[in-house]
Length: 354
Ligand SMILES: *Cc1c(COP(=O)(O)O)cnc(C)c1O
Image (tube, rainbow, N blue to C red; front, side):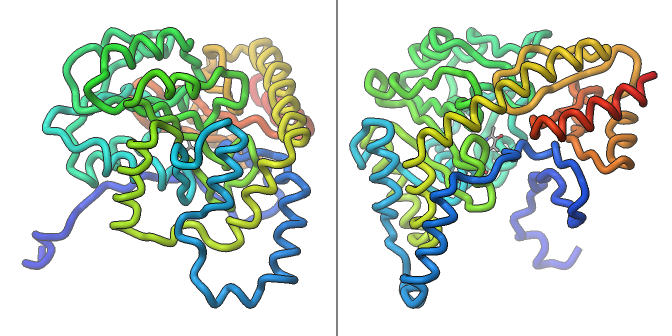
């Protein structure tokens, strides 16, 4: 090792799902929405290109005011209760940096979004994983001990398991001296948001994203909602890091997605319907899984190894996600695509599992 390498900040990075270049694949590996964004988004982008092209030479609005305002209106909040970032990954990273600054470990589940331990390592935040029970449920009493903060997704990823609101409130009640972050990346697929609880608990931060339920992973929009003091602290850190996080096209397109409620409800409902149908079909094929309230299913098969199925699917150009991690290395995470895509998957599995 060269001498200078001793002082390099070394990290083991998060591994995103594959984004294959070929077009003729069925992509069920990164929980993207199979439907396009709301039509208004396309219009907003066209209009931006026609009317505001020249303004690209200027910096964007650092406060992302139009986007913040449209989210605040949608959720019946004040503007100073909303923080936006470049996908919820950016929002979560800022929240880790801002709120997890204790010598006590932060707590999160052993099976969860695999970015949490990466940010904790990056920012030198101590952490302790709390094991899910055998049915992949969060055990709330594990979070009642002294800690430096709490974070978990609801529904959890990659399990899809939803926690009821009263249990979440129990965790918050036992943690009023630290920040509790609920990562609601998948909440629009059938869960109940903990958002109303921000009025009751000033230490609760809710994080959501346009990437899944609003079909805009490529635009990178995430947001956090909470007490205005929390949002102020987040903004202080953001402005100490990068002021111009949201670019001008994002500021034009984001609000257009929020405005089309009918489209949002329609695609959301479609994915939920497809998911419920696919649950039945996968069970008939010998797959087992806990109930999922997200846009993916986390399945294991009674006879066939997940890794073998994963590789066979890939050879047939159907991409799903396999995690070679403890406790889940015989599971596959399958995103819910269109009905046609799911039919192809089922057809392949029927042949393969014969
Ligand atoms: C997808 C996902 C995110 C991040 O999504 P962005 O595209 O960065 O908004 C955050 N948390 C969980 C649990 C996710 O699955």
